[in-house]
Length: 188
Image: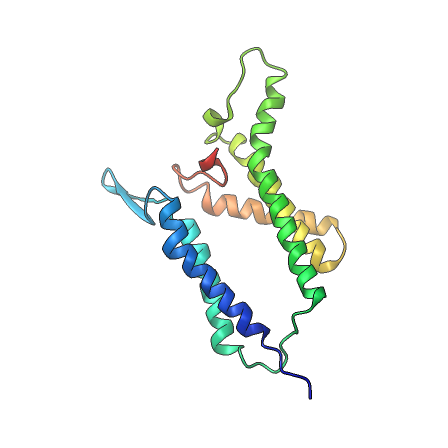
């Protein structure tokens, strides 16, 4: 009888450990403000809100695996094909983050080729269109790339889904808040 796979246990423990490191070590050391701040009599989003919410979802997913799926009979075995899949997803996310980080400044440099007085991205990173360039390009690459990996082909539907997902994220996280900078604009 083959040995029962314990991949849910390993993945769950990994997710819980990563989430706890993010919530209690990385995010507090990397952000200047807390989750919510009070400024001039009103509450504003702090630098730690978005990453803490994301880490909370990772923690929830890990706990769900540990509590409900740890002993599931149909757990996939961790083999070369699964590791290749995860490596492909990580690569697409890495490329997406790189594009997200450098597309806005690169667009400003291209615009400066046609201007006498040069623009500076740091001054434009909170203005519409400029602040969305990298987010839209990198986010679309990430979503459509992951869909392409899962479906084993790139499709127009995957790209349109990526664009739609990014537009929804902008509508939810950027439009309602005047003082929120979409990633990676806070670091540029």
